[in-house]
Image (tube, rainbow, N blue to C red; front, side, top):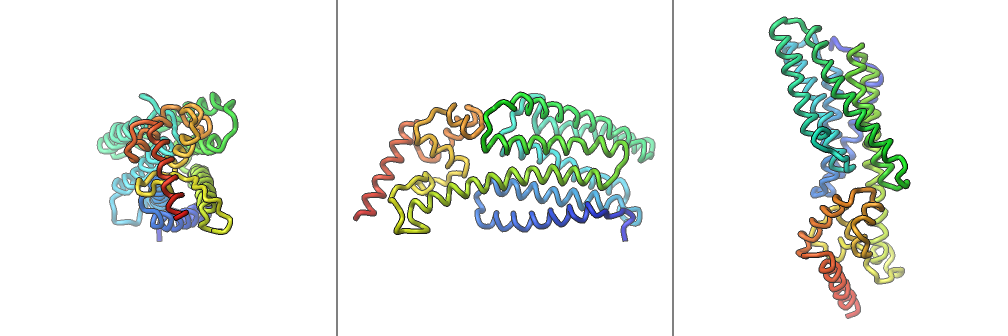
Length: 318
């Protein structure tokens, strides 16, 4: 049916993506306000879009013009790579700066497409030449982001091992694998290799995401168990989760973690070391927490929690 050939690795990619899509769709429905789940659902959707478009297009038997088919495939590549980087910046706290950020990645890809592919193609009508010109700036972009990633890993390899360090490193390694794709395509657009790299990138991100979800689920289970939700007779009556004490403020899973550590009266630097995030990131989370709970400071937040906890305990005794 198609002039393109579906390799085994492509079929496996589609199968993996479809399973992840169904699971994540159900996860989003269970918690529609959880932005972390929504972001990973979008990443999964773009992964499937990329695999399908690059597997089935361009198709010489299709009535769709070749240029349009190529644009569709490139949009899938640009969308996946840009969102993948954005996802890591947001969820894994990638340290971006003026010359290493999502906006630069997206802009450079768009400019490269128009300058090195579309304009040469419209002038020469030579598809092969246009693709060769176009892939060169993409390789430069890929090498740049790969080098920056490797440098980050090298500089942070002496940081004490922690839950978030493993998650962060898996995400950065995913960038390296994805960045290798245009280099492979330049020498030969070999579908099994390019798709295998994408699977590795997606797999590493999925590992990081689900590992973090498991970590959060354990905290939630412990909290509910302490409250007697699973075994009322074993409950010690000591609520431990800020999500339970202040349920109507809709704190995110990360804000819950930060909240519990704030309540232990730890400094932002100490919290950052435990969660493997920067002091500034902790400060931003804390600011959002205080804003949602209508508190003006850390001490006011702690006092508010104690008041709510005492009130719940009094009501339980009555």
